[in-house]
Length: 255
Figure 1 (spheres, one colour):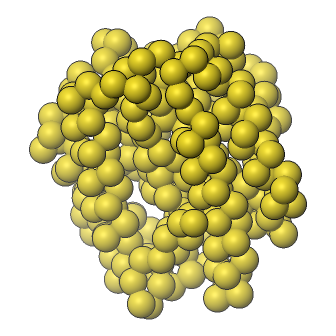
Figure 2 (cartoon, rainbow, N blue to C red):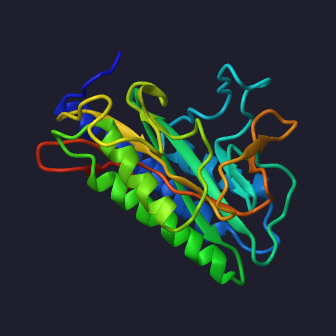
């Protein structure tokens, strides 16, 4: 069932989203050549703890996962698209890092992701990240009353395909509120004027994932979590929690 949030709930979700934004900013500031992914997870944990929030990622185990997720961030490096587990890997010059983070505060969830390069950036990585950002912007712009989920999906997919980027099938955004994952699903491709109608109070996590190789194929690591491009090309993932309002889209995961 799709839950439509009250204006008071949107304000509460804005506070959860602010915590997520601060955690992601802290992780980005700490990320550098030689820094371990576990260290970055610790940075995010500190932000959540100081805010009085908890992580919806830590201990989360959906049906596809063989084990609960062991961290508060997903840290996906280079060809990892999403769901990377922060392990012993230390960042290297030129790495492309995608970080996904969530927070539960006073019973409400926020969820967002960023992608950035570490050290010397490859021009192709910069272009990939910029295209992913544009896809997110297009999806957010379509999140207006009177539209449908398919309008968001179509807007994201149009940017990806125009840049000849791939997108992993069956992975996309979702509703969010009292839980991190709620109905409806928000695919990163679709037909306009199809799907659930958008109305004031609907809150969505919109999250394009673009793959540089142009193909949609992907594989899952033996950890059961980390999703990688099938061709070994690099990937980027950017996400915001967005409320549909009568005044237009409202991004809830800004600082």
